[in-house]
Amino acid sequence: MNDASTAKSARPGPDSGHAVSPSDIAVGVIIGRTSEFFDFFVFAIASVIVFPMRYFPFEEPVRATLWSFTIFALAFLARPIGTAVFTAIDRAYGKGVKLTIALLLLGTSTVAMGLIPSYENIGAASIVVLCILRIGQGMALGGAWDGLPSLLAVTAPEGKRGFYAMVPQLGAPLGLIVASLLFAYLVSQLSQEDFLDWGWRYPFFVAFAINVVALFARLRIVVTPEYDQMFHARELEPSRMREAIARDGKTILVGAFVPLATFALFHMVTVFPLSWVYLYTDESLSRFLLIESFAAVFGIVSIVFSGFLADRMGHRKFLFQGAVYIAGYAILAPLLLAGQGLGEAIYMIMGFIILGLNFGQSSGAVASLFERHHRYTGSAIVSDLAWMFGAGFAPLAALALSAWGGLPASGLYLLSGAVCTFLALWLATRLEFGKS
Image 1: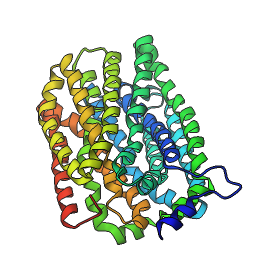
Image 2 (image 1 turned 180 degrees about the horizontal axis):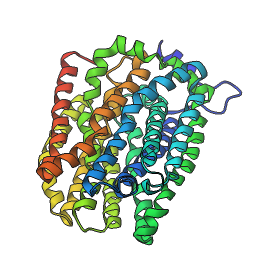
Image 3 (image 1 turned 135 degrees about the vertical axis):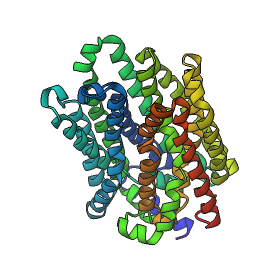
């Protein structure tokens, strides 16, 4: 299809509102991703400062947190299942129905977590219910894939693919900032007894309201005729996962490891340091949450900056260099975290700068591996696998390694992720997947 016919198909009819522009899509992407990551970080923070005491009081603190991080990983295992289920709903009933069900499942699962009684009240049933709801969250996150990042990639102006590729990633630091500030306020204003009894529940209730707002913001774009026309014109249609794996299995396998180091770093600067500070230091929890929120601002700036750098350097070269920085960070950063005070601040700020530069281009790198008409489902599967292998077990592995070999050992998991990213990028270049 030539450019003229593509542009024509994207124009609204006489009774339509307005054409869906890349800027409209970008707004929907940011709102949607912010709501998803807010839910994500509410659970992540609670996994450190709430769940070990409420649901694993029979274990000593480190082991209780490790069990909590095991439940944390369940969502990442469930994401591919959610993608398969909701892709079928997408094909049968459309993206509007799929998104509505997925976000309602996400919001309902999150709110229900705030209602679970403690282990002292209902015993092991509390852990079982938490596991079920966490799986529900994971399936919903897989189903919440709306294809907007892929649409952004193919509608981006010439020479600005890197800039538009970073837009979906802004939701992560924004969601973290809101979740961290909310928990910091509750921790500082309530006694520990009140916080663990009822205060921790409020962020889970807030998540549902944010999801409702995000749902309407995304449906405003997704259900429009212009949006459907743009998807059809660019051949971005959902296909069966089995077909996608059979057709692009090699690409999916390599693609899942391209952003591995980035996604591992994601939890090394968000979830793991919180657990280390909480378990092994006497530092104020609210103070560290404020440091984390402040450092996330540097992440936002770095994500935006990554767009300009990637457009100048090309995605592959940019990610190669990023993997070098992540490897160096994996070796040196734990020494900073051990320094506490200023060392913690440098650890967080440096980590978010490196994360922002790499995370800003991770979705673009994934999408570019696929041909246009295979991109929608292929990108979703790769994203699920990369999050599962790279991020899902990062807090668990890092805390277990640090408990075994001290804080410097926590960087081994991140270092292994950097090695995997090097190999994946080399294979992608050798096999000529996508374009730089």
